[in-house]
Length: 283
Image (cartoon, rainbow, N blue to C red; front, side, top):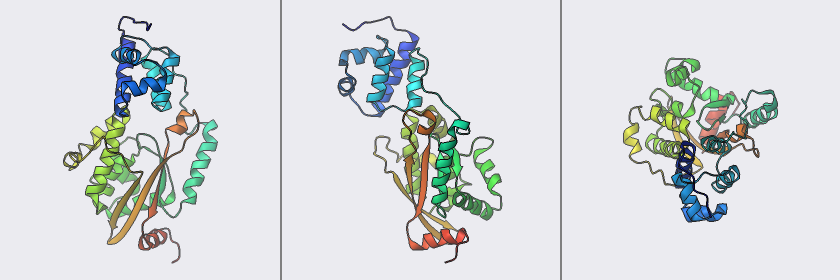
């Protein structure tokens, strides 16, 4: 028989998080209960806060939902347990092999833009091609790369969503902006459902001009493509790129799990020649 305890603040917090995570992933109670090896009735009690999970049960549910390690820590804290996955800064000495691997990946992608971002789209590492592209946009606006970042992000971390959607950032050079903006907002809306930093970022960008109208076309239930095609027109030069987002994953490593690698590729020969020329390569 399932033990039923008086509802506590911890059980309620965990229950809310469990129900939200299940809904975001569009899993039924029955489906999740079968995957985690418990009864639907017990799962219902957990979601309502009428039953308190053991740590083992909590981790089984997290595994069944393919929850990230940071979210598993949040669940443990919400349920009154200590977190078990350590968070380290990317600059930490024991993260040196990860930093070197990422830097090598970005260098090998030259002369095409590539960057490492965290889950909230903050820029961690950018290759020289990315810096050249943003510096060119800044120069055309009569400013410097550093000044453009300050305009877009203030004193906060350099954020690629803000650089992409801010009216003084890359958005004004995007020919297919209607399509690109909706794609970015759709991804951000889905991530904001169970990631508070993404929710705060969404609040910031929704204040930009035109975002409210674009958000009316956002479908948070749609399956997102890992590839986004963008048509830039910079100083009369057409630049067609497609971006791919991938994860740099290490088993049970919270810091590495949080990282994403975004690589941009030329979609035609004209765009490839333009990027190579920007890098100073001979035709």
